[in-house]
Image 1 (tube, rainbow, N blue to C red):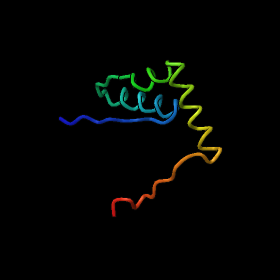
Image 2: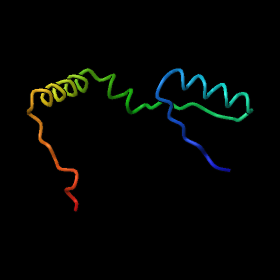
Image 3: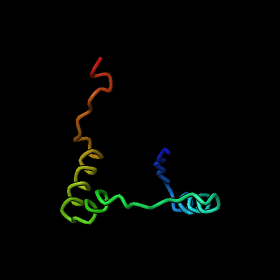
Image 4: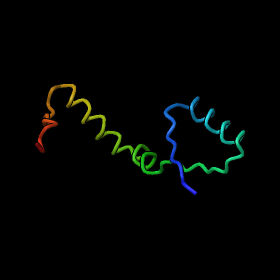
Length: 70
């Protein structure tokens, strides 16, 4: 049998997907994205991310052309 990976973008989508799977009697399990939660739980990392976003807003970023590999 195949495994499906579903990534709902909103809470509403998550609730709907759970309801559909239960109605179809499909066995499923929910796994948290621990990596994202771990990063966001680290205040130093959040500070670095916010500083980087501010630098980009202030025009201090470097643009890399998307056709770099051509």
